[in-house]
Amino acid sequence: MTQKILVLPGDGIGPEITAQASRILAACQARGLDIEVEEGLLGGAAYEVHGEPLPAETLEKAKAARGILLGAVGGPQWDKIEDLSKRPEKGLLGVRKQLGLFANLRPAITYPQLASASSLKPELVAGLDIMIVRELTGGIYFGQPRGIEERNGERVGFNTYVYSESEIERIGRVAFEMAHKRGKKLCSVDKANVLEVTILWREVMERLAPEYPDVELSHLYVDNAAMQLVRAPKQFDVVVTGNMFGDILSDAAAMLTGSIGMLPSASLNESGQGMYEPCHGSAPDIAGQGIANPLATILSVAMMLRYSLDEPALASRIEAAVGTVLDGGLRTADIALEGTRSVSTAEMGDAVLAAFEAQ
Ligand code: IPM
Ligand code: MG
Image (cartoon, rainbow, N blue to C red):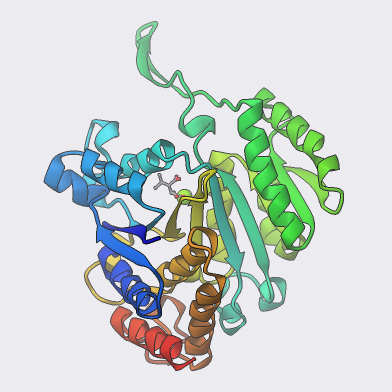
């Protein structure tokens, strides 16, 4: 059966990097992958055309797609939009919520070729391979009530941090399964010394643990987890946490690999439908210059093949092609070593495509 794929280039460097990833998708198609690819508008790009970041047309296409490949959304030109619901980021949050993409997988891997690019000492990060499992459709990002209102003569801002047991359980199961398939260690991150919602979080994780006897479950408060991530990151295998803590910790983890331009992510719902996007943002400062690193987006295609299209062999082939290109010394500016020439976005795309075809 032909599966539909939706490409949402988005803003900033989004169009440049998704263009390269689309070439890899086309190469997979040429090798027999039965997909139909279309494009849509999301974020600031959609706001400019439709006056909203998630037009109905895009949402329809997204619902019909098995896999969505997203570049990135946002940029300074939209930061002044007063109506928060019209900001580019709301387009992204809307797709996550509307499609029920509750499980966000964010690998933080140090590529051996890039260990020296980390802000930490190479020996602390060499071989690092963490999987952060972030809950993506609940928590304080979506909790009600929320708002800014006048109380006793001054403005008050408020949000609600809420998780139901069932929401905690379903993300917990994804994380336990993941740990079971990987290094058998799961660290759940909460703030159970202060916040009731995360006392419940910890209780549910404890309740699930006996069902996964080969997985060793531990707990850390989020402040300690942040410290441990920069102190001794290799102690972690799988980390599971809520939406906001996961947002913060995954940026930190990504950066310490020295290669945020290399890291893909997946956001999945219960039926395996997923949105795939690089962990980095829209990088408006370098947009349009043709120097952005397309590898995280290309690796996001690999994740799509693995998690939504059940094509692990093609996924491995893309990952191997990226490894070959790095081994060959090719670098975009963000991962370049001093004194070496860095290649353009398109040249990097060419090289990955050539390595993919050569296998
Ligand atoms: C991310 C981003 C988003 C988030 C923003 C753009 C809404 O930071 O995917 O981590 O906070 O989830
Ligand atoms: Mg973030």
